[in-house]
Image 1: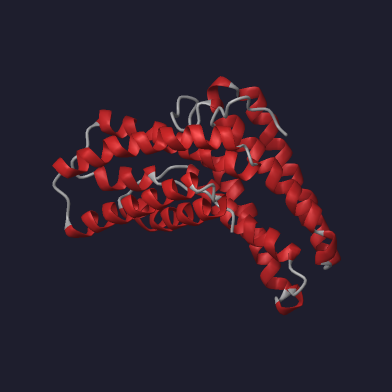
Image 2 (image 1 turned 90 degrees about the vertical axis):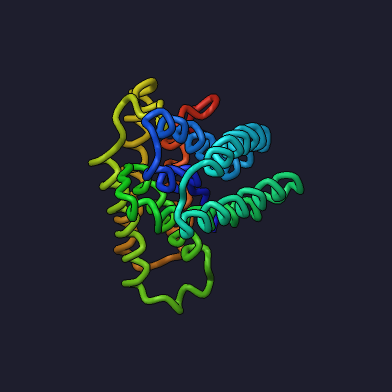
Length: 245
């Protein structure tokens, strides 16, 4: 599954017990770097992926040094160790030009994030986006699978409904214009609104086709939703040259 989900929110969770506001602000640029890396990997833009991956690695290195001086529980120490392992593996994947392996390691980070962020009382609208793409990749994979007959149609519809729900939840709780992870919300608000509407429309189009109960006609529409999603996230993170493909 081609998902890139973010390590820095985990870092933020681990810092809560001893962090300062300045340290919290430090984490946001790391999350944005990894979001841009994710989009670049999905789009096959190796130059931007490499550049922002290197930036994220440098930021993580600085945060890791701070953890060595912090008072952490044993569970938190294990989490930091896991993050460090997956981050190192991610770096190896980039070094060896293995984008799929890079995405696998980021998925490990995403799973840790989904477990830890709520546990530490951290609420950020980005989580809805991560949940959306997790569900939508399953939709896309199912549409492309010739063995879809093994899946109950209601289960497939549930995947769509879950993704659609996460998108609507994000729209209700989306970041403020000054959010450091999504600077495009404020700096490029018109494009952000247009991209959001395009994604909403693509989802509605897909939903209407579900009534046909024929997965063979859904592959292209599922890819259209994925493309619209990447376009939207690119705008709100201020991806370099953030124009829809």
